[in-house]
Image (cartoon, rainbow, N blue to C red; front, top):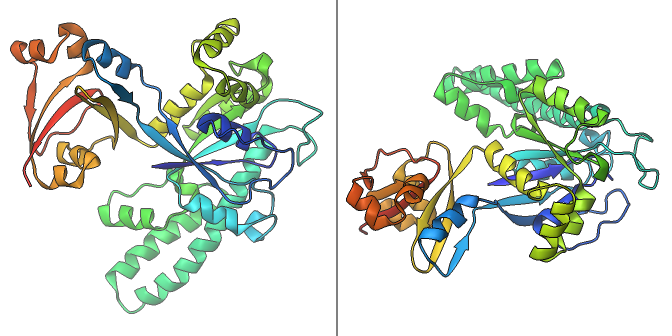
Length: 363
């Protein structure tokens, strides 16, 4: 699963990306300094890994990972080829969700492309370009679908229905992510369109060090905007997080304590992005490693097993599972088994967040 980081030039996208991935690449104060999208893997902080390790001793722990794509700054007119135009928009099309970085701090040394800081204007600039690009895509697909529908083709008629619904929303200046179809076929067709504004968005408010909790007027405007859309906001000081990423563990803890923080804001961001993508974790635990595995919410036990290896899904027999809470209560798998809380689940079992599993399979 991938999330793409988008925003106007000079809002702190690359600084944030580098801090998240500890890439250590210094970003310059120039528009379009990111020519190709950088891709990085970000561990998703999860205290449950430590909890499991406190009762099951192991050589290492491996967290879940979220893949991030740093997409170069979009400018007004990108949908018509301004800046690096549709090249950037095509990169967004391939990701599963969008992290929209919005500048919410004042700094005379960092030039804003529009001259002054206005987060709502910035959001609307990005949204407009994505909607215009979608409208172009929809109109192109609609012409083809209508020609097919005129031949009496049932699938063509259904595609016209989906595309016309998208076109109507976009023409009103609204993203299509609010659309949903009860019919499974129409829903599948909608997803296959890969429209930019169909993707879920998490707003990342890049704040100054004196507003780490995001209570300033700029951030409050973004919060209001997100609330109206049913979305969320994570305040992050990208420059501070970049500093924290370069420190060793002990120095990082000291700096966080001096700021009155429990953890880096990037930890909150990684978890929020994970949730945005509709993901959850289950765990495997043994002598060699304790590991968090990423699955979509609603995944079945065989699908979860397939994340480890396709053979596990193909030859799935059953899984033995318990929760992290069971381990906290009873302190060992032996005690869990003896208490009757070790459950045996079959192919229809829907995985729950915090499951710890042992899979049995035969290929």
